[in-house]
Length: 133
Image (cartoon, rainbow, N blue to C red; front, side, top):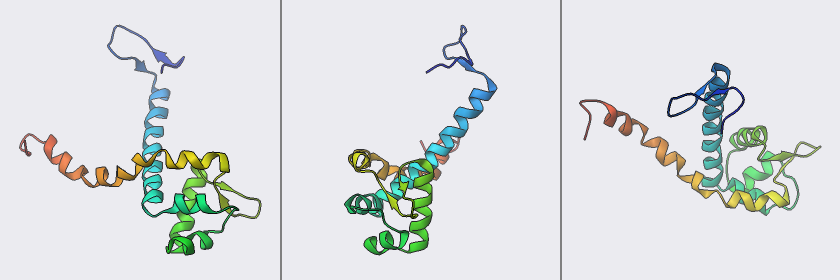
């Protein structure tokens, strides 16, 4: 996807303007962090539990339903609401809109991200000239 700030030249790939490059790089890092938070939500059952509630819930209510610490659930809800995946009601309770709930179940691939991240150090070693083959 090319924007108006992208130069098309004789190179095999477009050369991005510095501002667009910075935007894309920053977005990739941010989206990677959000993806890991999504994986946490899958692994701990936070999305499943939120989907079962029929009205907005407090961090405490969600934590109790998942048998988790409220402080961490509150932080996770903050991340998910900042990313736009969890909504906040006028009385500061959290929910996933009914029409959006099916989409939280369709991206379970995110749950493998922690395993991929855990293998990063092994992959780093493979890159090295004297690393494993």
